[in-house]
Image (cartoon, rainbow, N blue to C red):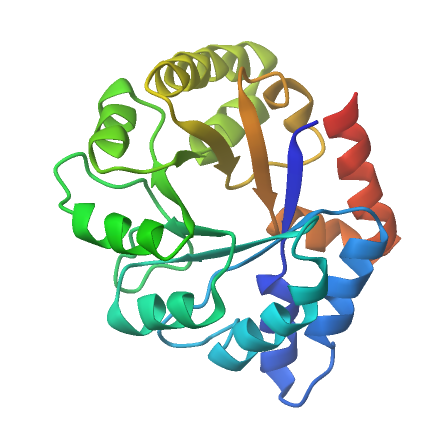
Length: 242
């Protein structure tokens, strides 16, 4: 089955808006795991507006006894502080994403002329799987293979917008992701996906060929406000298992 990696950034965002430790980020992680999630994703940004360095370290300690069955995915741009943190905690997977100054959230995948090979090699030598955040194009996928990535994470916001427009638009967009996934698989890359996936548009997207993992945070946490975190994680797992 496709692995669900729950992005818990928004729990930290809510906590930081007030200060203190409410809601408790580690309790959110425990709740996701008890509901059946087998992956946790965090994206520590340089300004620490949600996930902090301390959060990354504490989650790593919490997950350490379950390293064999729960994957820790650390997302971020290849700045020195992020790379140092990755080497310190040793997550299963590092997802390298481009960061645009002033952005609220990720806006696009890596440009296909980016030089990132040395960073990828360094992380892989330390035993971490490297996923590269890319747009769903053959050029981007081929760049990720040349850069030495183990996987690509397909940027799914365009698909989500198309699916919200109409089922036909969603299907047309999905076809682009299928082509990108097939090309990635042919090049020996694993396939992850994330950004604006939700319970509705995931019904089609779960059918993506060779899909290994989806990382979902905003939509999952937003629904969790109304139905509870344990329930919503189970809902996503049910969709992926269908």
